[in-house]
Length: 120
Image (tube, rainbow, N blue to C red; front, side, top):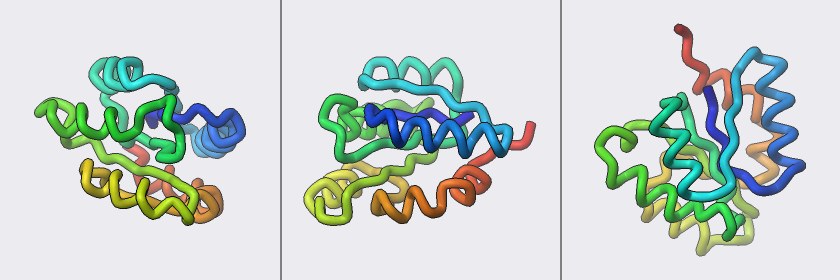
């Protein structure tokens, strides 16, 4: 299961479509509390964050994941506009695993989902 902390409906749709084509389950959250609750309950194989979204609180999500020993090992992947260097630096400082420009994220989405896909 992939947890998507994304407000942008276009990107959520792109992620869901790519995941469906690969047979990967997607869960969504749009607030830090919902993201942490779903991460705790569902133990996703990766948490994907829109670093440009203030409403979803990506930096708060990252801080809370890192501070929780049960959740700290969940891989995190963020996408951001390439011109938002401050968001990239902040996400890295908050402990994000990987950051990609929005365009690179969209272009490589199936490969990214395959990489984080769990076999059970």
